[in-house]
Image (cartoon, rainbow, N blue to C red; front, side, top):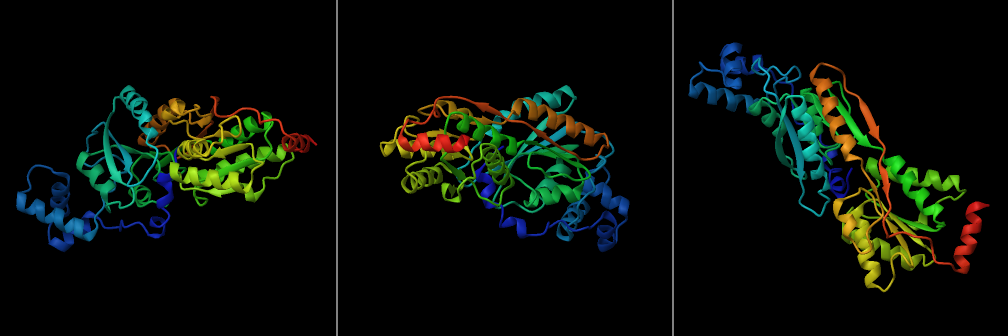
Length: 368
């Protein structure tokens, strides 16, 4: 689901998870206390004086102690609380995932659970922040929003903790499930729409190529082009960073270097809206002279001029399914992966290409 927020996590992906394997017995030995005293201190149980509790907590943190949270038994009683972890971005990024909050919370309530929301810095993630949130609030499980993918420290932490967790970035483990939007199918939908409208010279503005979603969207796009016997020319691809600014720059570059392109497919809506803004400012009419399609289905994409045709994530299906998968994990079932097909939203930013000698030749080539 999502976008430029992913583009800065690659540098963090090179770091190993900071969570060492330190247990209660190790902390107890270091302090010459009994394991039961340390356990009560860490879990906030009555009967441990304040000075001892503070000493235990400080020592445990310094040693890198991490509780095993997999069986939701920090104090032996269910809290019915689920943590929802969302990223804080320091750069331009789509925030349309907030539309998932309400259906997720409603689905949790249907299971007798309540949600606690935690905003977590994306680029400068505080080490063990997830662990602290889960332990201090006795969370039974967590749902982690994009763009925390496998390379991000928060996902490495959750996999080591083995707390029941569902994410939307294709990270799966023994107690971790993922429900994703089928990005390859989304690329297919976009390509098919443009080709059936008669376009054959199509520019493509992708996001950072190391990201799974960018790879999948472009693969699906090229697969459908091959069905029409078209091999996509690498010169028709530009790389953006999911921001509107990058979409504007790359769209103009493509148009200047390839004046015969009649359509532009952008790997997210922000880049597509930047493209519309820039091309229009240069006197290039959208869609009369060039069609533009986005990806993600952000709410505000309906209010561009012209309204943006886009590929929309089916959040009304993804959200409750994420909660169902989490409940299965809490019951002790193993992690799994599911993909939900997106949908094409047709508006007014794409249409048939203008009739010209170049386009007539291209259409003939496309069907030969």
